[in-house]
Image 1 (cartoon, one colour):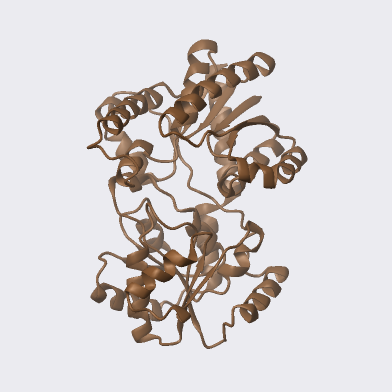
Image 2 (cartoon, helix red, strand yellow):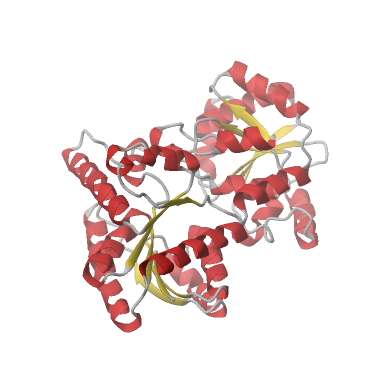
Amino acid sequence: MNILYISYDGMTDNLGQSQVIPYLAGLSKQGFNITIMSFEKNDNFQNRENVIQNLLKKNNINWHPLKYTPSPPVLSTIKDIRTMIKESKNLYKKQHFSIVHCRSYIAAFAGLHLKQKYGVKFLFDMRGFWADERVEGNIWNLKNPVFNFVYKYFKNKEKQFLSSADYVVSLTENGKKTMQSWNYLKTTDFPVEVIPCCADFNHFDYSEEEQKQKTKELKKELKISDSDFILSYLGSIGTWYMLDEMLDFFKVLLTQKPNAKFLFITAESSKYIFEKATKKSIDISKIIIKKSNREDVPAYIALSSVSIFFIKPVFSKKASSPTKMAEIMGMGIPLICNSNVGDVDTIINNTNAGVLINKFTEKEYLTAIEKMDKLNTSPEQIRQAAIKYFSLEKGVTKYAGIYKKIRDVFT
């Protein structure tokens, strides 16, 4: 079965390497013939083209990279959508795909076009409520008439994508239930499967010897002693991730654990984080900021006593599955995170893999620290919980099942 996978994210982006290629490599091994069309950012493509090309070739995956247009806003995206539709038609004429698998809303424009023009089966892998994310992330200001128009346009397209898709993938049960409550989907046979952001637990494995050695070396390099309590944060900062509130939590943590340090594993600006911490009267000698490639991320996570992420608890985040959650739990590290985001509440409550924050207040933080100290969940129990909810193999099996269902129903 020939599959065209379309992504507006690049395969040379970190996201492509963690949340696209591992799934497609697994599907390729199951006998699916996969071609990826992706939009690559110039710097990443120049730095990683050969590495990704070799990786995909090794996994018998064809790659059709296109150039991502970064600006101007809106117009650049329109240009890329036109390119995407044109190139997907050219590829279809050569390979006659059975299914077009579209990652998120922009890719879905081409997927819907192939369905309407050639009858290709359309899998809408929505990844979240994209238009609402743009508004709630303060990317689109609805007071601006242009963005107001664009938002309404995409909400209408969302209806079309969901109504026309032969199958839909939601990242969360919460997102699935929300969609099933919408009037225009209530009366339809709405084929939807939940597949969260999974992790490769062969890579995120706290018992792996090479990783253990890297962690020891990092401990020396970063001057972390055995007596230090390490609160870590993994990933980008901004838009959804609440840096101010996480620093507030750390400030309270220091009153209970003066030996605490805050490790940021991020490519974000050190200056920005230090300035925020200084404004809150936090000693910046207590803060460590390091950028890591994907290969070394497990070793950095392993430095943690506990890891934290606070995400804006807004409507669009009902459909959010934080990739970092799977990776951190895979390393056996407990979590401090806030409620009302995707399926986070359910997973934490069912597994005892961490502590939930319900309010961003000093009192709530003190309570969370007390609960954290009483957690008796072992690293292996946390890892097994991660495997239960976020196994890459289970994710691949679910995608393969969707492909086969589409094939069996429509052939």
